Length: 439
Image (tube, rainbow, N blue to C red; front, side, top):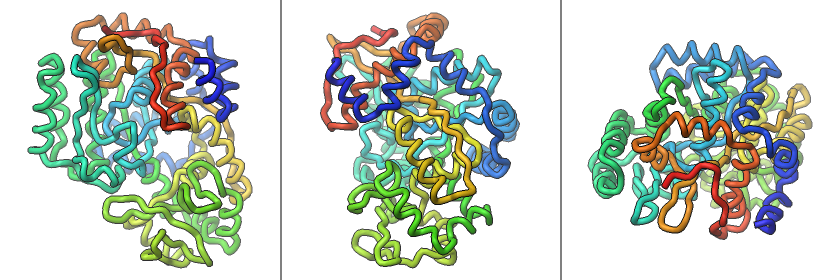
């Protein structure tokens, strides 16, 4: 186990630093401290965020909660992949964040998730996962033939196909839980955009948890927000389309996670191209933005970029999004990777955008695993459905008390398997029991 821990920390010195400094701090206290407001959040961001929320949820009560939230804190989670609420290290982060937010009398849990993630990602954004006597089971809400598409580019499966997926797992969970799941999944079935469906459904899934129904989980893809910022702020446009911008960006953001690599093999340059449901890598070659086969090729200019951005045919890459969000006063709480690479994004941002200001808090907002479910002889990280299933037979108040005793060290230690898989693509079983285990 020490060998795996050292391998993970070797690539993430800031994660090691955080772990060594805060490992004995209660996780709820750590996240609650992260909500202390350090900067004023830009009115531009708040108005755009509220507008995107209203487009999807059509609920004025959320707008009041958003105003209240950002009057008290500038923290926002960026830990999740936009998709159905399920993956253990994301969901468990939202769960403990809810407890921290309650302590600050905050009524929402806002999340800027990654919408450009591929549907075949190992976190399974296209559906729900859970453990049963048969092993791991999955409920897909987007068909396997769309697995090469990305969340922002795909559509929800038909009601008939989703009914088939649900029928296959009906006997693998308590009927009361199956009925909750069916009700929630079909509540917004008329929504064709999978991205919007996921936002709507996740709010209902989270509110269906006993003791957590008084908080709203509000997930919006960060790419939608950053695209709107570029489109609606003339000051930002003047910076993005000045004569020396493209060359400075190429140099300063090279080989940064979420941007582009020097060999053109990894990441993308400034934007992803959205085509046929998929995201396509863009490279900057001979003064042009091109995809791999040059079927897409344009000169970088205000006249070319803004219409494509408006139509959603290109979306900002993660490095561009986080640069804009950091400048607009937000403290971003990411996972075990972001805590290291966010500082490199901000360093590049100060070079490319001299007028931008960043305050790096280095808050780890997720990739936490502190609850497991025992299946046969093994213990697996507990997903949303695993915890909902166990809430039907276990005392929820006791669970909350146990979560409040979890330390940051416990939660980070539990996710080392995921971090090791990210680095090596090797799946390993760690003989480590999280503090909370459901039988």
